[in-house]
Length: 357
Ligand SMILES: NC(=O)c1ccc[n+]([C@@H]2O[C@H](COP(=O)([O-])OP(=O)(O)OC[C@H]3O[C@@H](n4cnc5c(N)ncnc54)[C@H](O)[C@@H]3O)[C@@H](O)[C@H]2O)c1
Ligand SMILES: [Zn+2]
Image 1 (cartoon, rainbow, N blue to C red):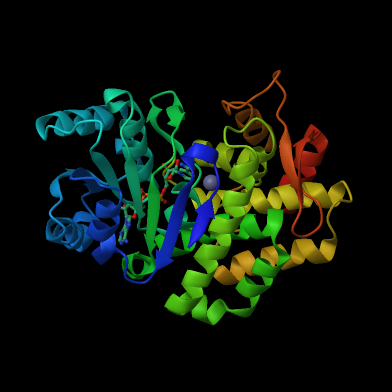
Image 2: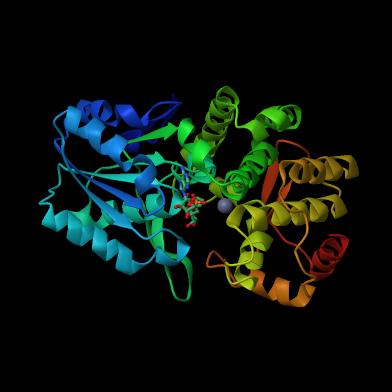
């Protein structure tokens, strides 16, 4: 278990192989008697019954809502469906929203919880690698607008997170590996030890060894929690978590969110950031090779599928909503296990890095 220490918004993250069957027991401990489980059309046939049974066994009156799966449904319209279902089910401020699924369902349900009746509790049951190691912890919730991703949202912490590692066994290979880009990112910003665990256990990772996955998820949540605890609302240090995301987000957007999964774009963004750091003498060539090797061995890309004009890519890095004073500030690794925020990058440095891919 990992304790996320955020004052009155603190909570526990439980990580284990058979947690979905214990949801009812955990919810009961909070004295909650009514819940709405929100999930998607891929996850529902796999895990919804198990969660509903567990809630029913503890006498918790529960309804469910199944949204269509996919990032394109991370919309205000889906949030509205959740609010309406909650009203139909007569939920009140003492009731609970439960997010059962990946980052899309977590972000949507969290945002709906933050805003329904001006805020009701919510519980996260993340079922993808990405949502277990990243999205379910830290309280960022929200949805997309036509003009861009995550443009509407709230910082709103769950009452608890149950990360059931067994759910990772049903992910497609591409979805499973996708989540490892954020893991490599965490290792780069905070833990050379985690980096070695990844390098030394590639076979077990591929085999989805549950003991190893539990260990990896816990290590990642500890890293994410340690960053979020120092800066819950991203006024400073939390920006460290954006390593690889300046170029990565731009790449995702260039591909219209169809060509790259988030983690794939971030993997390429990480290589780019490391290359720029190498040019600035913050990172050794040997480390650069280690990163590329690990990503490749994991099955993640280290260069774009097609050649991209660096000017167009550079331009896109400016469309990130987090721009301060019209400057793009990069996060760059500073050796292994440490990173620097607020770094300026020259266009020429960016071009050199893109051409090295
Ligand atoms: N809140 C945050 O801090 C934060 C951080 C990172 C990412 N995100 C958000 O998370 C989203 C990406 O998360 P994601 O990659 O989990 O996407 P996702 O929720 O779309 O899940 C990916 C796919 O896997 C399916 N799926 C989920 N669990 C499954 C399982 N156990 N077995 C089989 N299929 C399963 C889903 O139906 C979906 O098709 C993005 O919207 C991103 O903006 C949020
Ligand atoms: Zn990310």
